[in-house]
Image 1 (cartoon, rainbow, N blue to C red):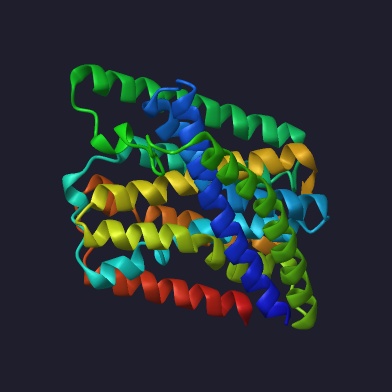
Image 2 (image 1 turned 90 degrees about the vertical axis):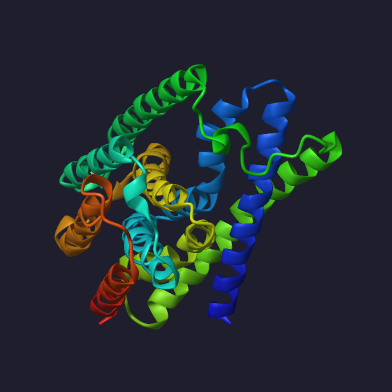
Length: 315
């Protein structure tokens, strides 16, 4: 039953997160916030709401291993699994798109996270640093996007935020917001409790459950988005989705969770996992800087690397 509860918690999280995005996006547009700002901020926060609530609940329940393991494991899964599986289906022509600036920012966030991990605790000081860097990056992205819009070459993706519906009524907006605000903490509570119980059942650490079960579960929305982007030949959306998600996981999710409750970090026990996360991030370099396409060969390599990593962590 505990696995069923974990699955139910994850399902509630994903549905509630989607509802919150729809409600928040349409409320923001109704009150006059520009679609561009909504795309770069509210949608980004909303789609990461499940991971955020899991990390906050885990921090408050004194199981930081699930919170930190979830973020480290999700970032690894985002590169190796979320890009690997779609590449097995179809070639993603990432060479045609420029994601260099966002990629460098993501690498910087990864190095900053590892540097803060050396303190062996993520507390309010770490939270301030991470959230300050996130604010700088978001302001820079907004400035760039405004410049592109003035130049007339802004992607249509930014003009139509995910979940936008000009015809959505006020009662429906309120319903989606209520559903998200109630469902997210309930789903996170259920998943964290179940994950903790699974860890006890199999005599493994909370970190292992966070790195594997929780990380894979919370990476499923990114996987679905990336598969659809690959099938639609939108390689820029696929790669940008992974880069943005990884950056947000490190800066926003751990930043907020650190401000709520201090989270001890067992650096020696998680050194291998940090190295794998950094190594996975560096694997994106050929696609970002050297105009390589993500073909099926790379899909096999990434997928095999991820399966090997999960086996090593569990065993």
